[in-house]
Length: 516
Ligand SMILES: Cc1cc2nc3c(=O)[nH]c(=O)nc-3n(C[C@H](O)[C@H](O)[C@H](O)COP(=O)(O)OP(=O)(O)OC[C@H]3O[C@@H](n4cnc5c(N)ncnc54)[C@H](O)[C@@H]3O)c2cc1C
Image (tube, rainbow, N blue to C red; front, side):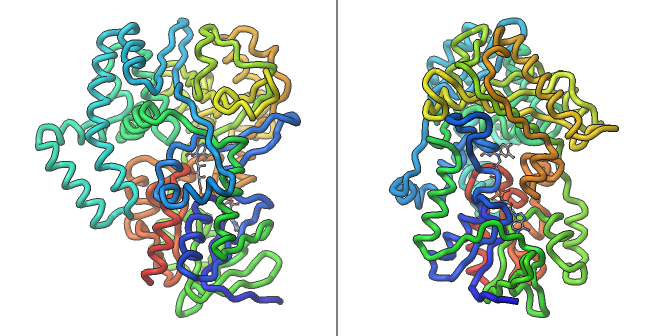
C-alpha cells in the first residue's frame, strides 16, 4: 500500500474545494484535492453534450455569485491571465405567459421601469418599492453572506442594518424576509404575471410559493441580476474550473482526478488523512476538508464509531429537496418565441403562474410528474455566441421541480417522456420550436446524483435551503466549518452560505483550519 504525506487533504474538486485548497497553498501548506470524477469542477462543467461544435454548461451556468465572491475579488486578475473570460448579457431575465404577455427585466433600470409601467402601473410601483428595499438590504446582507453563520460579523451586520432602518423600516424588511414568495407578490404586485416572476426565482432554491422565508432569494436575485446583468463563462463553464485548477497548481497545490475517497481516517487525535478506493492512503498533518454533503460524508466516508452522536443526528435530520432535470438542446437557431425579443434574454422562466408552481412542488413531493413543471430556459448562445456554430444555438433548460424518484417507476423509464413534455410545453410559447431541434441530451434527477454524490435525489442545491436549514447549515453547531471530530472540516453547498457558485465556504473552511 503506497502512502503520501501532505498538510491538508481536500475531498472534492468542486469549486469550493479548489477555493479552499488555493487559500491553503497560498499560506505555504502542501495540499492535495482528491476528486472521484475524471473531470474537476463538480456541479460546474461544460462540454459538447449533443453535437460537435455545441458547448453546453452541464449544470451551473449563471456566474453572478462567483463574480461577486471574495475569491474572485482576490484572484480575478490571475484567473484572467490564465485565460478566464466571461460573456455578459444586459438582458438577464424574463417570464413568459400563455396569454402572450411577458415581463422582462433588463440591466437598464429606466427601460425596465418603462416596460413594467406599460404592463401595469401598480406592478411598476411595487417593483420600484422592492428595488429600494433591495438597495437598503443588499449593502448589509452581502458582508453577512461572506461571514460564517453564526459569527460576530453576521450579528454586527444584522444590528447595523436594524439601526440604520429604524424600527418601522426594519419591521417591513423582517416581514419580507420571513414571508413566502406568494405573500411578497401579493403585497407588492397586482397582476399574476408580476407575482409569478418573483415566485419563479424562489423555485430555483427549495422555495415553493407558500414556504416561509422564500421571499429572500427573489428579492436578492431579481435586483442583483438587474443591476449586474447575467454572466456566463466564455467558451463553457469548464474554462472557469480549468483556470481555478491552473491557479491552484501555480501556488503549489495538486489535484488528483479519478480518485475516490473511501474513508476519512480518524484516530484519538482526530482526522489524519484519507484512504482511497484503491487502498492507498494520503496522510494529512493539519487535517481534512470535506466538501461532501454531511449525510453522505457521515454515512459513506466515516466509520460509525468515529462519529459523535450529535453529528450523526445532524446528518440524519439533514433534508434534501425535490429533484431537477436538465434538458440540453442543440438547435438550428434561436428559440422562435411568439415575442422574438425574448430570444435575447439569458433566462426565460416558463411557469406559468404561482398556482402552477405551488402544484408542481406538491406533485414533486408526492412522487408525481408535475403537469406544468417550471422551466428555466437558458439561452447560452444568445449570451456567448462561441457556444454554437454560426446561426445555430445552444439551449440549457433546467426543469424545477421534479420527484426525487417517480412513484411506481424509475427515472430511466420516465426521463425522455418528461423531456418530450418540456419540448411540447415550449412549443406553445414558441411555435415551430420542435422543428429547430438538432440534438438533445437529457439528465434526470437520478443522472445528477450518479454524476455527483452531493446531488442526492437530483437536488441541484445539495440540501433544502428552507430557512431552518439555510441559516443553520448543516446544523447550528456545525455552522462554522469545524466538526466535532478534531481536524475534520466541512465546506461546500451543504454549509453556509449554501449552494451556488459563490466561492465562499471553501475560503471560510480554510481560514478555520488555519486558526486550528
Ligand atoms: C443543474 C444545476 C444547475 C445549477 N445552476 C447554477 C447556476 O446557474 N448558478 C449558480 O451559482 N449555481 C448553480 N448551481 C449550484 C452550484 O453549481 C453548486 O451549488 C456548486 O457548484 C457546488 O459547489 P461545491 O464545490 O460545493 O460542490 P460540488 O460542485 O458538488 O463538488 C463536490 C465534488 O466532490 C466530489 N466528491 C464527492 N464525493 C467524493 C469522494 N468520496 N471522493 C472524491 N470526490 C468526491 C464530487 O465528485 C464533486 O466533484 C447549479 C447546480 C446544478 C446541479
